[in-house]
Image 1: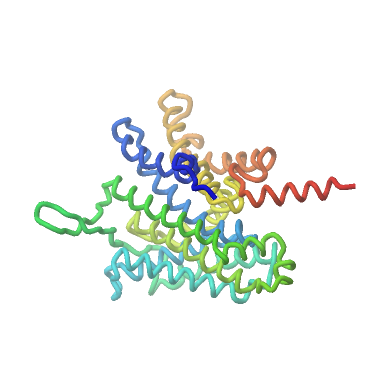
Image 2 (image 1 turned 135 degrees about the vertical axis):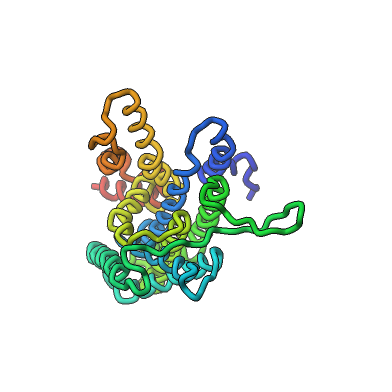
Length: 360
């Protein structure tokens, strides 16, 4: 087989998005775009949706409790790194601990529930998300209840200066260092998901998704395969929660990690394309970009033009976003049910299904 030309590698969607993200950071201030800060939220939800894509996209399990794992990650990071607790692991060790806790929580949820399928599994994961919120609120001795845990340590990296090696700590008002850090986490998450997709484990996930009975007849054990998917997806969701808490230097109240977070992550996967890593990245930009970037700019422009009054119902972009999200989902289900960038395997399966249905 001949090697892939170098120019074709730059035609890949994920590489093109990485190049655009780097260019955005370089030209943002010069052009006055003011997009670096809201793009951090896009990256956090991209990591969260990548975790959901492993469970729902690769393995075919409808999961409605990703917000719970995001909350577990945020509080695990806060408890392991905040000064008011005895651990004080710092940012990097705290993120690693958060991923381990998230994977363990995924195993705990998956062990008694992976015998369920379809709507039954979705109901269980939905209930788990609601229970997690209540537990975090009522364990106020540990979690500080609705107050949230703060302040949280900022990231730090070694840096060379004229005086030698120093430790550079990120300040809250420095947008670019945070942007590059979050972009690095997204790149790592994409590389991990890509390698898993091409591995034996990833092929097992796809086999279970396409036909669990056939996979079982071929000697595959579906429950351990699903368990690995649950643990991996939960670990990514927990890392997203840890980064979210670190960005705001606080966990916020447990109510911030509600069912809407899980639905938003599911919408990203559906809009981008079930089982498509590139689709998840594009879906994150489309859905979160609408909420964090497009709607505030549109609302500001309409207020400056005098079309809407500041403080009115239509003056707040948050009052628009779920209307827009619903409209986007309706249009996607009508015109692009496989998503913006559907997975190749999904396209092949859909063609085979259409051939079978059209056979007399």
